[in-house]
Image (tube, rainbow, N blue to C red; front, side, top):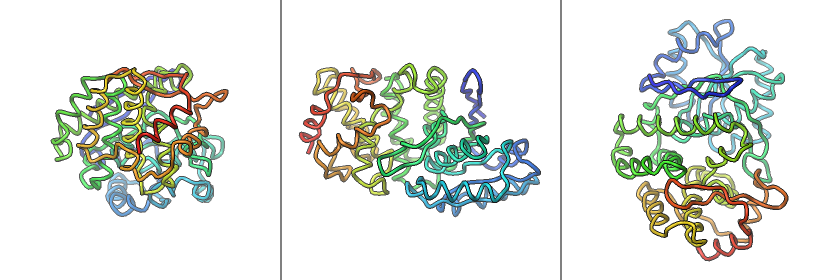
Length: 366
C-alpha cells in the first residue's frame, strides 16, 4: 500500500493506492459506516461492472449499503440529478456524521462531493475512483461541481474527501478510450513542472497501455503525489499555484461546450486537445520552442488522443469558442488568465492574453 497525504492545515487526509484494494474495501470502510450501513453513489456503468464486487466485500465485513445510480457520462452531473440525489439522501435519513461513498469516475465524484457539501450543511464523503482520470485528478483536491447551461463546473464548492481509495486493477476493464482520456491528465503533471515525468510517460507509453502493473502504479502514484503537493500549497486557488493544474482546461472546456458536454468528446480528450492548443499558442507567441509543442502533440497522438479542433469534432469558429471561455470561473474584470508554457515542465499563468488573438489563433487551426 502506498499512502499519500494531502497536508491541508485544517483537514488533512490520505490517499491509499494498492492493486487489489477493492477486495479489502469493506474492512477499510467499517469505521465510516453508521449502524454497519453505507450510502453509495455510482453510475450505470459502474453499477454493472464494479458494484456487485463492492457489495460482496462489504457483506464479508458485515456491512450493507443502499445505492443511488446516476446516468453515465456528463448527463449525470446536472441540476436534475443533483435534486434526485439530495432527495434520495434525505429519504435515506442521511446524518451529518455520515460518510457518503462516491464509487465511480469524475462525474460521480464531482456530484457526490457537491451533494455532500450542501446536504444538511455538510456531510463527509469518501472517493473510490474507478477511472484513470478520476484516480489521478478529480478524486483528489476537493473540487466538486455540476454543469449548468452556461458551462462546465460553474456551480460547485471546495469540499475535501475524508479519504481516497485507489485500486489500479479497476483499470483492467476500463474501455481503451477512457483509459486514453485519463492518460491525458497523467501527461499534464509532466507538462506542468516535471519534464522528467513527461519523459517517463513518453518512454513507457506502450507498456502503460499494454497493462504493465508496475508502470501503471508508478504513473498513478507520481500523478497523485504531484497533485497532493500542489493542492496543499494552494487549496482554493488563491495564490495561483493550483491554477497550474488547469493546463489545457480553458481551451478544453470550450471544446466540451461546443460538443454539448457529451460522449462525443470526453473530458480527458478535451484536455488533451487543450494542452496541444496551449503549447501551440505558446509557440505562436514565442514563449515556447516549436519543438516542445511538437513533442507534446506527438505523445498525445501516440496515446490516441485528439490534438486539433477537427480531431475533437469541433466546428465552431474562434470567436464562438472564445465566447464559451468568457464563462470561465477564472474570469476577472474582463480578463481571463491563460496557462501557457515556456517549454515542457515550464507552465506559467499569463494574465495579458488578448481573447481576440486567441480567437484568431483558433481560426488558424482549422
